[in-house]
Each structure stands twice: as structure tokens, then as C-alpha cells.
Amino acid sequence: MRLSGMNFKVNMGDIMLHVDTATLTISDNSAVSQTSGVPDGNVDGDVAANGELSLNASQFKLISQAAKSAGSWRGLKTFDMLFYAKTSQDEMKVEAFGCRIKLSDILDIDKKGGQASLFKIPFDVTSPDFVHIDGVPYLRPDEIEDIKQ
Image (cartoon, rainbow, N blue to C red; front, side, top):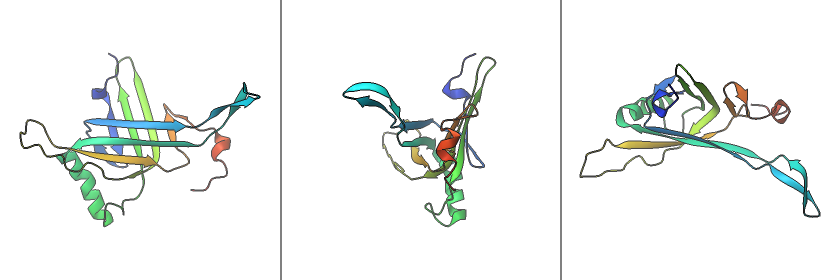
């Protein structure tokens, strides 16, 4: 059996979540270097990563309880995100470090009903550990060796 979205487990710090959708996007602004308009290698650029979780009310409540314990939504400490899936044929593990959430679409009311209300929670990756894919860091060790956390 191959991996599908149904196989993924998502952990936000110590909280295991059942998400409707989840994204994680890496922006890498590395570029081609040129001499006289001709490609002659490449240069490193800045990197960033962010994502979004979409969850139902019962799952949102788990995060809301953590925010209440922290004293406010913005008072939540950063956390590591783990996206993990395994089937008989495939396995994938993606980790995003030092994530900080921001609330987005917290209400989307449709009086017609027929669908569970979903809450969208965007997050940014803030740690130099950045993102690891199947245990392999995206960034080279020399890129983060002098950065203190």
C-alpha cells in the first residue's frame, strides 16, 4: 500500500492532532550565478518554511487548551512539528523545528450546514534546525554552525 494523506499522523509538540489538511512549504532563494549573462555556478540564498493546519473543532480545542495554559495564543512557546506516515511499502517522516503558530480563518460559518467547521492555523518555522526530511536536514551543517538558539 502506498502513502496517502490518511496515513499521516501529525504531532504539534506533545499534542497529537487529527488534521483535515496540512501543508509545509520550503522557500529556498538559492540562485544561478552568472558571468556576462552566462551561468557559471550557483549561490546560496535565504531559506524560509511555513505551513498550515486545517482542523475541526475538537482538534482546535486541544490547541486552545495549550494556549489557555500559556496565558494567551501569542504566549504559546514554539514547538516542533512531526508529520509521520508508514504503510507496508512506504514510510515518510518530516520534522519542522521551532514552529510558531498564527491564527487565521477561525470562523467560516455557513448556515446551510452540511460540513464541519474547520479552523486554519498557519505556522512559521523559526529554528535553525529548520526542516528534516526522513532524518536528513535540509540545511548543510556549515549553514547553521554559528547560529545560536
